[in-house]
Image (tube, helix red, strand yellow):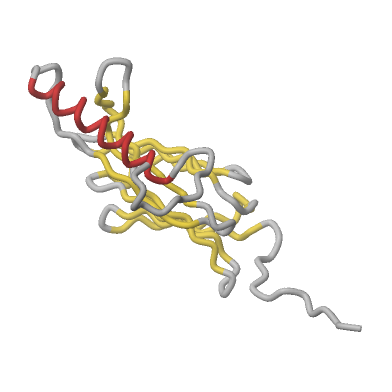
Length: 170
């Protein structure tokens, strides 16, 4: 490490290592394209946020993934999604982007700790297993699909508390 750079704390996997991996993956992807190994379209992206425990949550989405030699293109796209816990409405909301999918061809299943979605469109297939940080009641699910956005809301098994418990000081 150069002397003029301040030292950083490093965790099990340093934050910048994710970007190094992505950079290597894109280099391999472009080499594969130049060699004519496969053709697009290619979809790839990352979603980055901070979890409740203060650790980064990095999710990849798209139809390419690392392989032994370069990258491989999947026929099934891993869609972008987000999970939001709303203590004001006492709901767990899952939003999934499925552009081009047909409502009749969406298969949605839920367990207490995850949501599974499979969808088909004219030229695309989507599939994702979405982990949930909060236990939900799968029977409470309500879903809507408008303009390629699937929104699913669940009631949590135990109410989400926004406030802590009052502690008396002696």
